[in-house]
Amino acid sequence: QVQLVESGGGLVQAGGSLRLSCVASGSIFSISGVNWYRQAPGRQRELVAGLTDARDGDITSYADSVKVRFTISRDNAKNTAYLQMYGLKPEDTGVYYCNADGRNTRWMTFSIWGQGTQVTVSS
Image (cartoon, rainbow, N blue to C red; front, side):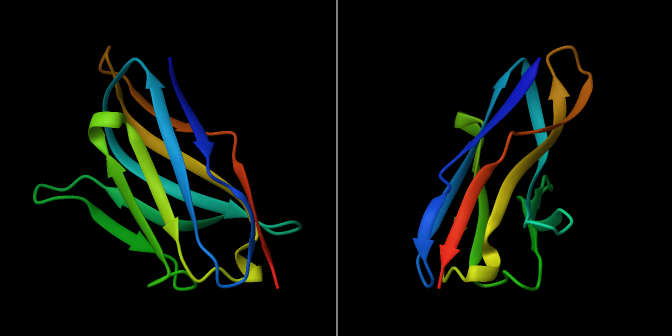
């Protein structure tokens, strides 16, 4: 069984920064992609940033609203993904979720979600 646990959320003033972490544990063989989503109160969950395996290195993508300000990365040795957020705005407030796709040690594919971590940006 594979699990994801996010951390790093909190309350920050506008213009501040946070780094979210997403740690995968369990019977992991490989992780092919990681995505960060967020959900603001009363709104649908939206994709913020994504990272995918590629031959020459990870391919990253970002929502237009966070380009330049957010950076997704991972440390394969630690089975950990990160979302570095700079220049935070009140509209970045929400619960941030990590989603990972991969294979377990039985070569079965998985797509799992973490429990989320709250980010609140005050104006």
